[in-house]
Image (cartoon, rainbow, N blue to C red; front, side, top):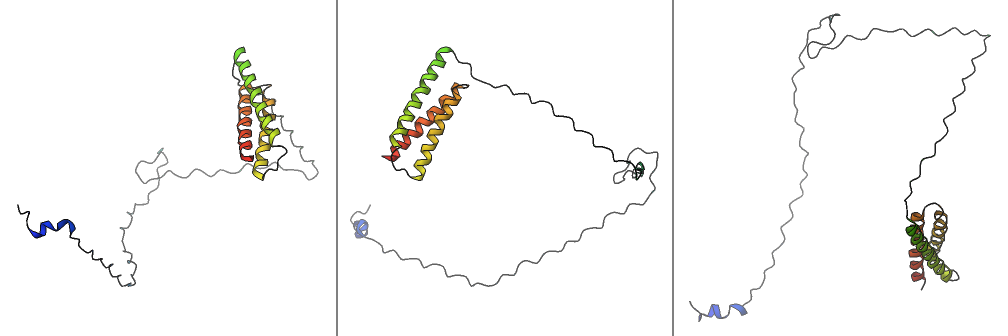
Length: 188
């Protein structure tokens, strides 16, 4: 090994100057003609001899044969209407059957679950109403006013749903509370 050679000793300090590579010269823009479509000749379809179909056959026996056309049917003659006769009264349409109410599916809750849901609904509605009263007197932007209207609608819907569906009422009350909390944060 040659450690004492001058080229090795200067190697880490010797920097080569980078020579920039010139960009390739743009190719001359020559109009390119679209390729000519290639003409293909197809062989003529085979000619089949014209033969009379056998009436006794039930279906085509050879490929390419077809069934004979169906016999021509004459339209039924219309009854002759007298000029003096009264036109027939239209028949009354039958009444549709009475709509049967669809069964409503509801969740079966134990008394403890009903009480827990009712307490949660009351708590969420109270929190939402507290937030509504906190922002009611303030000047609100258009989006904030929309949020306030939604919170009020969710509170009303939760109170209505409480009568029939505690699960839905709980969800609506929770939505009202979350939206009201967001509204209070946006106003401050």
